[in-house]
Image (cartoon, rainbow, N blue to C red):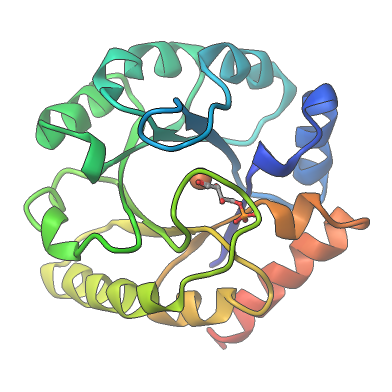
Length: 221
Ligand SMILES: O=C(CO)[C@H](O)[C@H](O)COP(=O)(O)O
Ligand SMILES: [Fe+2]
């Protein structure tokens, strides 16, 4: 089962509601919202008011990817705004266990994100407490970057640990996902895929989304 989460980072911000509705109609399973603060990453994007504005526009779960310092200070605002999934970077959290508990206490699915160079050992003691793990396959901060294939063995290794420990954690992949790159990640055990430029920068978004999903499902058959 492959879930596609279009990232609105590559959408037209002047008509965000329409852009979300379009990918929902095209078959998306989640809407991915990239929150950047200009500190943790060298870019500034959107905050809770955008999540709140989009909440009534779609029935899809809102997947909020926090690329910010001190996420604890903003998690409640994002939850109240309507986030269904919130993920935080292990590199940005001083007290990761506390942060994950905070997200869950608000009734939101909690995820931890690893940058391309961050080893999976960093999260082995939080696996009992998270709903999903997000692997960055680009350095966070911008859409439209090239997929970093050296992350794939990390996905494979985590999938094996999840299986061995009998956990029910979903694996999400974010960055440079296309019909060409999704297969290796799906084969490695990922089930949720963020795609920004590969959907929103295309003339026919529905066709682009369906091709990416089909390429992911093809390797599972
Ligand atoms: O978190 C992100 C960047 O930090 C984005 O979700 C990601 O880059 C999506 O864009 P694309 O599919 O174009 O790579
Ligand atoms: Fe993201």
